[in-house]
Amino acid sequence: MAKNAPNGRRKQAVASPGAVAVATAPPAAAELPSNATWQRRHLLDVDDLSRAEIELVLDTADAMKEVLRREVPRVPALRGTTVVTLFYEDSTRTRASFELAGKVLGADVINISAKGSSIEKGESLIDTVLTLQAIGTDVLIMRHHASGAPYLAARHASFRVVNAGDGWHAHPTQALLDAYTIRSRLGGVRGRKVVIVGDISHSRVARSDLWALTALGAEVVVCGPPTLLPVGLDGCAIDREERDPSASLRTGLPPVRVEHDLDRAIEGADVVMTLRLQKERQSSGLLPSLREYSRLYQVNAERLARARPGVVVMHPGPMNEGVEISAEVAHGARSLIEEQVTNGVAVRMAVLYLMIRGAKPE
Image 1 (cartoon, helix red, strand yellow):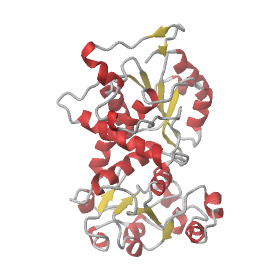
Image 2 (image 1 turned 60 degrees about the vertical axis):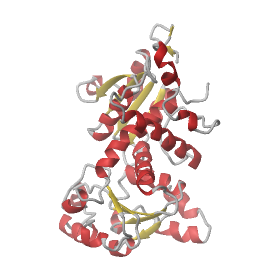
Image 3 (image 1 turned 30 degrees about the vertical axis):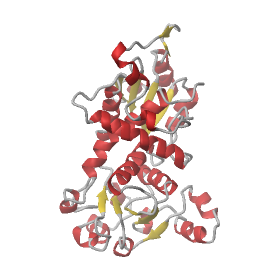
Image 4 (image 1 turned 135 degrees about the vertical axis):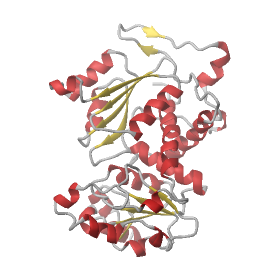
C-alpha cells in the first residue's frame, strides 16, 4: 500500500516475489466473506460497532493466530507502514502487544512515552498529532488519562487512530480480545452468561466489554458495591424487560442485569471476569476497607463452585491477588488470564491489518 512520505511524495511498499500473496492477504483471509470490508477509519470504541464488524475482527484474529504459531512468526503484510504508539500512561500488556503485532506484520513501529518527550515540555496533544503526521505516521495507537483524547487526536489527524484506553471511557481492543478469548475457549459468545465483578464505574475495560459482549448476544451480569456501579445502571435491566431504552440512554451503557450479591450473581455463570480494584477507591470513601471488599467480592474457589461446570475466569490485568481474586483461582486450571494476553497480540494484529489492508478505499 502506498503512503505519504514527509516530503509529500508517494512511497511504495515492495515485497519479494515469494511474499506477494502474504502481503495482500494473511492466511485464511480468503475464507472471510467476500463483502467483509472494514469501513472505519478509526477504532475509538466498540459502542457503535455492529455484530458483523466485531465478528470480522475475531475471524481475522483466527488467521493472525495461525501466523503466530509459525516457526518464524513474521509476514510482510504491513511492510512500508509506520505505526506509532503514544502512551500518556504506564502500560505493559497493551503497549507490548501492539508493538509485537505491528512488527509481526512487518510494520515499522515507533514507541513514544509522555515521559521524556516534548509533552513534558508543555506540547499540546494537537501539536503532538501534527508532529507525528509530519513524520509520516500511518496509524497512531494512543493511550491517554483523559476520556475523549483519542477523539480529539482523530479529529486533527490525517492518519488512523486506535484508542488503547482513555480515562474511564473505553478500551476497545481489550473488549475485542476478551470476546475472542471467550469464543475460542467456549465455542461462542451468544447465550453465555458473563459476570463482570468489581469497579464498573471507573473501568474503561468494563464499559467496552459491556458493549462488545451484549452485541454478540451474551447475557451480561455486573456485580459490585453500589458505590462502584454507574448511577442508574439498575434501571437498564428493568427497561430491557419493558422494552424501554431510557435507562440505557441515561447511563450510556447497554441493558445488563445488576446484582450486588456475588454468590447470587455467579450462579450458572459460564465466564467470571473480575476487575482490578484501585486502592484509591478506599481513600476516596467509596469502600470501607479492602478487607471488606475482598470478603464480599473476591472471586475464589468456593464462589466458583456455584457457577456452571467448566466456568472460566478472566482478568484484564494487572491483578491484585488476594483482593479481587485469590491466587488459587488466578493461577488455576480455570484461569484464562495468560490466554487473554496471548490473544491480545492476534486481535491487535487483526485490527491493524483491517485498518490498513482491509479498509474500503477512500
